[in-house]
Length: 319
Length: 233
Image (cartoon, rainbow over all chains, first blue to last red; front, side, top):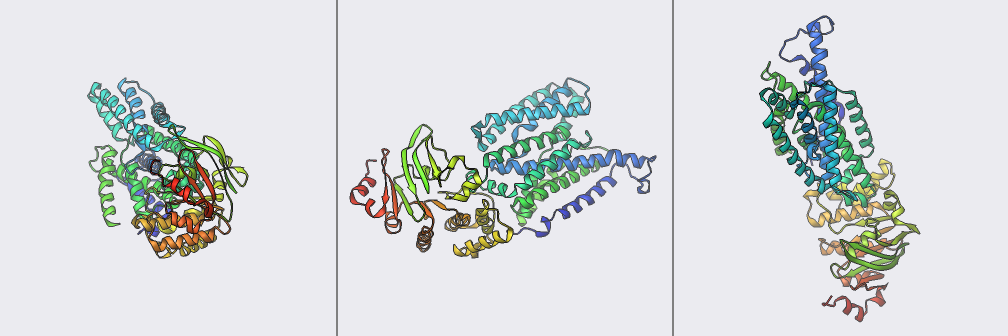
């Protein structure tokens, strides 16, 4: 197993992230003179500090949360095709928020966030409840999650077919993910930080859980409790991300795979590197989305796949 | 002392075990024999505390197994599954190190015990390989080594010799015999000759809720073996 020792060090990833942040903030549809960066009266100041940096932070937070949620759900259901949206989160949030858009209600960003968050938590609880027979059965979660996703997809298509042209455009943006919408939220920082902190204490138990629930139990892990904790975390992280930025695909699926190829299978390294790599990846994808055809902004979901697929294919050949 | 007291197990409405009692003590090497579906693996899972019996209880050193928290349970009992599900590509070293989970080791001690176990199980040359690239027999050796690294007082093994070559089978059974001098070893095994030659005690699951246990020399008599090999079961 060839893992790269230097890639296991989080500070390397922080460095990448800082570089990407500097690049991301300095490119865009308006060229900015950097000497004006700290002059509060200049246009540069307001674009950088009020638009680009919040958006970049938002991308990093959402990317990190989705990647961590993906790592967790793949461990829980032991299925490499699982992504955070398996819990019905995206469908629940999308249905509620699209309904709001379609009804033409003009709600504040915070209200829309709360509606999305509520919808996704409800959908997740439904999936988990349906999969609960004395304890949560991971293979039931997979099946119920996929079936529920089809149900929500039908509701979403139904709403799209009823919407008029202008609504469809904003709905499509939302369905493919849009980071320009919301301000970075402190709640998300706290939840992501707390999840990481709690999971870090359990990193060996997570390794054991990855080898199967029975294996974990026989080795002394309180598997029922760990499973429940991890399911709740996945649901929280994904709901926050979706409520914040819509359903950005592919990050939660592909980043955990890429990181495993790079640093191996031990959660001691996986947890921090996955969060940082997810943040880096979504920051790059979002920077591309708003600069490639600038001044037109494209949905970031297009670029997560356009960047992620070749990176994954090259890595999986090499390693 | 690991003790099954009148345990009964229902799995999906099928009575798998009915009122089975048996006591396993340190210094004893037990073989569990019986036909397929007789409930051998179910019994082992109950003894390992992974399956709660519907009636009766399992006591380990006079404590109810199912009242114990998972860590202290794993400190008492190590369990080898019949088939380990395939998993992620951990290295052999990492896999064996997982056996140390129940113990609050410092890193040096953990490393030392893992290395010792790898050497003792003759798999130290495999330690950097991925467990997914091993042959079936090699993977079995890793699973057994993981149980040994756990260093528990009671060792429960479900068909430990599966996939192993004859050389390693003989090596393993002698090793188990040595371990059983100061611990209790309980294994499910289909090889009556191995059980007769090495085990001090035997538990026979004969079907129709008939369970016989005792020291192997007296239990493995002609009448009992005829019962065991009865094709009408």
